[in-house]
Structures are given as C-alpha cells and as structure tokens.
Length: 101
Image 1 (cartoon, helix red, strand yellow):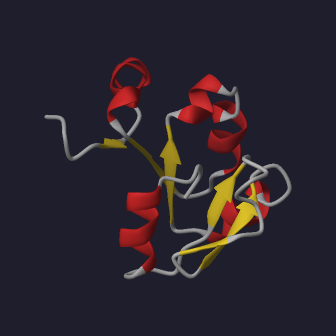
Image 2: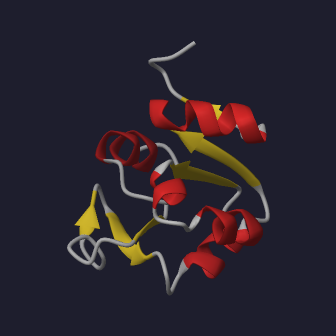
C-alpha cells in the first residue's frame, strides 16, 4: 500500500501480507493494524519489487511521486479513492473506489 489509508489498511492487513509506505514522519516506524509503516522514500523500491499488487493513493499525483512509483512497480498497480477518477480516466489507470460507478 502506497499512502496510509486506515480503513483500507485495516481490511487488507487481516487478509493479506501487507507493507505500507508513507511519507508522513508521524506514521513512519509506527505499527498500524499489525503492520509497521515504512518510509516511502527509503523503502519504495524494495517494497514495490516485493509486492504482487500495489494499492496506491491519489496523493501520489499531488505530491509528485506518481511517476517514480509507476516506474518502480513491477506488478499491477491499482489506485484507490474517488479523487483519482479523472486522472485514471485520462491515463487509463486501474482504480478502485467502492463509492463510485
């Protein structure tokens, strides 16, 4: 998971082996739902190589990390949340949002 979203993290951590990347220094190193939050700058390449699926927050568009994330991700990337809808449509990104059609 790229970018901490509590509800998604809680649901995924109970069913899958999960690693969470975040840039918020308040989160890095802390345990959330049994998963230690990793530094999104320092650990991104390793985690994105390890994972089978990268769940990525739309915040990567805003903070300018989307391009390196897409370059490092060796497997499938799915963006989550309603805010990615327009960008996903424009760039043909996979997205998941249970509140949209």
